[in-house]
Length: 245
Image (cartoon, rainbow, N blue to C red; front, side):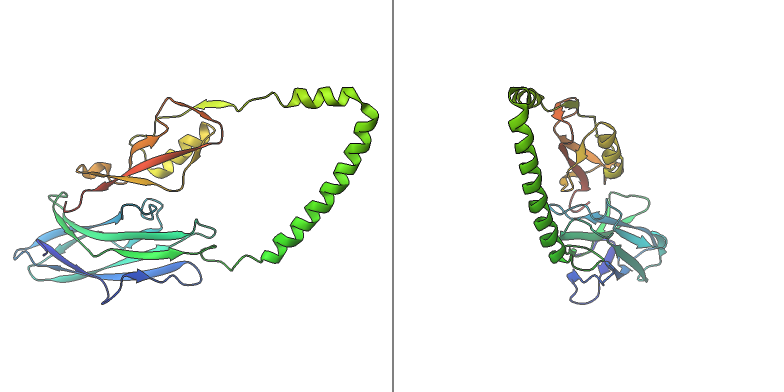
């Protein structure tokens, strides 16, 4: 039962269907049921155990997020979904919370909504015949190269063998993992790229009671200062608001 704001999406909507451009819009109706005038603030939250659609800025509130509500008054919030082309496929979830402007830790939550991203969001299906043709070309080139190297190797003898054995001794380069705590996912990705690492696109999540930490990195794996292979991935755990706050 709502304490301050009753938040409703279109009747029966649980999964939002994206159009051919990877876009959609959802309109929420928010009603002040507290009995007195309230100033409300709309906040988008990614659902736990799903990729961070809100943190990626795929899901946004259209227009001002802060609104004044007289007692019993209803107002609408439009939420837009825009998924970039070639985004990672999967199911993404979010909800709309409306909190008190004066007390951001108090408010109400909407029902969760989900949307599915297919192989190429906002684009056409990949023509797989191109991949088949490319594979055939690579096989032919590989055979030609193997024959050429075989002829060269038979002439060069042991010198060629010693060079090949020497080339296999290099090991994987190690780099130091930077501290990502308190950063947004976008800032964390930039820091990792500067260090020669990658951001794991599948975020973990943890709950927090600190409204200022919502949407920021709370934990990471490997830990800051650890040595990791260059170009390897680092997983982050993004802070979400605890349920009921």
